Length: 323
Ligand SMILES: Nc1ncnc2c1ncn2[C@@H]1O[C@H](COP(=O)(O)OP(=O)(O)O)[C@@H](O)[C@H]1O
Ligand SMILES: [Mg+2]
Image 1 (cartoon, rainbow, N blue to C red):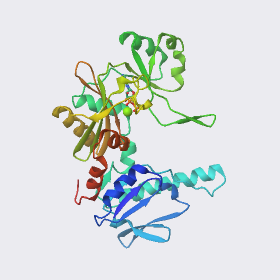
Image 2: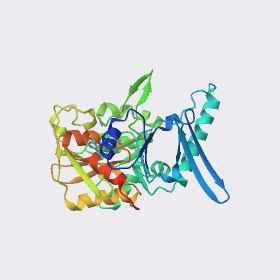
Image 3: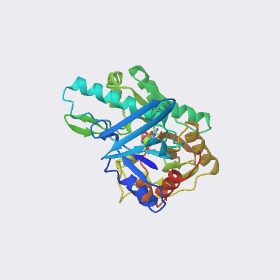
Image 4: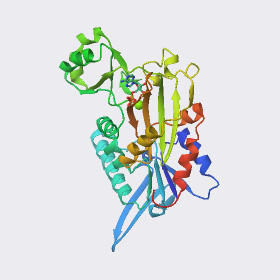
């Protein structure tokens, strides 16, 4: 049995499920947000034997039968019927801890991207940059932290062409509205407001000149590279995630074999079976590493660049044996 852990509105997971149908592998699609309210989970260690059961919608599933797990984008455990906020936080933290233990004990050998606890452990931008450099990637000079005194020297070192970006691209709320922080150029005016850095650490790097940007999606041993023509639109020039689909072309890109191999080794070095790597190809033809996204989206790459990623994920999840 294949266990897909994601929210019920996950269209990308649907693309994979439709490719698994007909292969004779039963699929259980489950959302952590249903736990603890609508799902029961039990681990029993009785007489030297361990048995783990997940019961949802009246059906009990023996977790020893799960051969592969795809941890996609679940909602967090939610104890919605516990009204007191402190008690609710306690219930949800207990639920999270139980799930981590349950995942640790499951005998399934194929996890994508990895067991959830390992995903959290390796989701670390500084570690990614250092590992990439160790593997031979070019990386931008980087200053990370909350020391306002480091901004002006970094700006001068970069010849006045410096960007700032955050550690976490997840949206945050401002008066109930969702906001994203994008990569932005630091201009001379911003230097005067440098004291603000103290409250939330940033990442500072020289603003790289770009021929194109690359999104490299690694699935097991396979590599799919899309080239994003981010420089053709004002909207995406600084950060392609402003998305201007009609104005920005996506196309398959052939990486030099050494760079492709480095992407594979980078993802594997963290024990991951999946990873989305962001690279910049400079006008001088240099491939510069920016970022590894452990749960990076891939469906837009499949749709816009025509790369068969969902089929590769379906293959990986339904293969047998240890990866
Ligand atoms: N040093 C840089 N110079 C120019 N553009 C950058 C630089 N760093 C990031 N960007 C742009 O911002 C985007 C997001 O930055 P990235 O490092 O991938 O972080 P994350 O995706 O975690 O927010 C990149 O894909 C790229 O378009
Ligand atoms: Mg990125």
